Length: 161
Image (cartoon, rainbow, N blue to C red):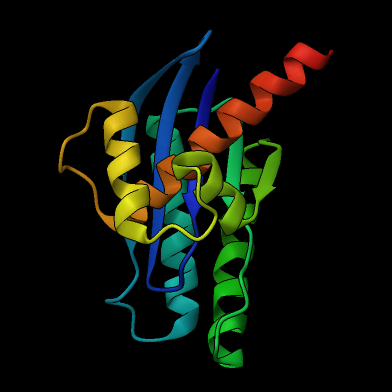
């Protein structure tokens, strides 16, 4: 099963693609879609949408997972994050992918054992799990953590069936 994980953001949207074969997880691709060069916010949303389409044209996926929204300190930031997340979900749905949501605390707990782990700890654990020493941006590491979280949840659901 091939899984794409998404860490949505209005400036940078991280993505990570893993292949799950039994208990084995293999890193296939990861990176971030950089929308900071856009002149308007709406152009950023278009860059995110197009970027995810390009990634999935190159790396098809069987399932998709995305981090749910946390409430930012600034209401305006939360709204922008929600719009970026909505565009990411739309891009995934247009490619016929079912989208699974995971709360940030659940992704952190699943990755590190601590639901309040700092980003650096999440990054380090993802690098260790996928043998990627020092090769990830924070956005890509977070997206891979979402994909890893889903791979474990999907495996659990299969065992229950």
